[in-house]
Length: 84
Image 1 (cartoon, helix red, strand yellow):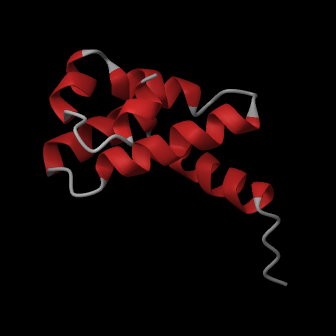
Image 2 (image 1 turned 45 degrees about the horizontal axis):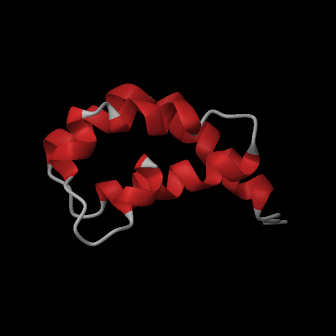
């Protein structure tokens, strides 16, 4: 539900933040279900688009740089990118 509400034009960032939406999306981004993982990553991306630095810092504290690296590997594998 949180992931879907972020895509809506009238979604309030404040509502997402007040309801632990960032934490929930980060947790979902670690799911073994590839579809749930992908959708939560896209939702976080949409949440961060034009967000202020405080919000971006909050997401990175919850996600961590190691988590961001796992996302990159997931995307490369999910979309079968082959650079060689």
